[in-house]
Image (cartoon, rainbow, N blue to C red; front, side, top):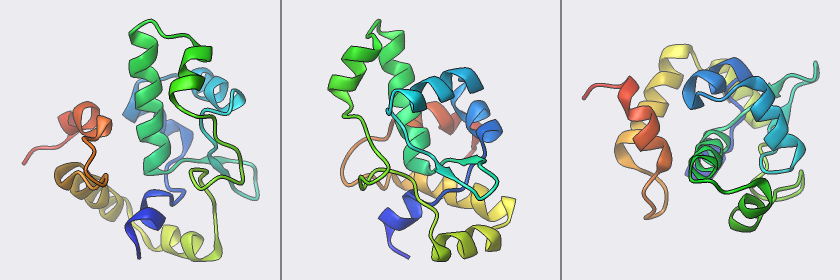
Length: 136
């Protein structure tokens, strides 16, 4: 599975994302409303977030803490829509892979991503925020 497909896989429920980002559900829904993130939706309309969504939420959080408003964030981080490459999608392949992943495997994938910094040469904001959950 390619790195981009893996990073866009809809894996995390909103409760997990809240713990990973220290954002409230209301804040996350607000950013979704303003098209700063586009999580995938299950048939039951549950939001599922990808690694990319979590990283984007951490970027938004960092900008908010620096005093940037939503309009400024929209200029820095281009809004995403459901048809863009950055939108999290649920395909048959990713749905099967998600069901195959246990919590421990998901934890291992997240840890590996943080340790290797697989962001095409960019330093990951997630690494700074989430590395406190892992020990080497």
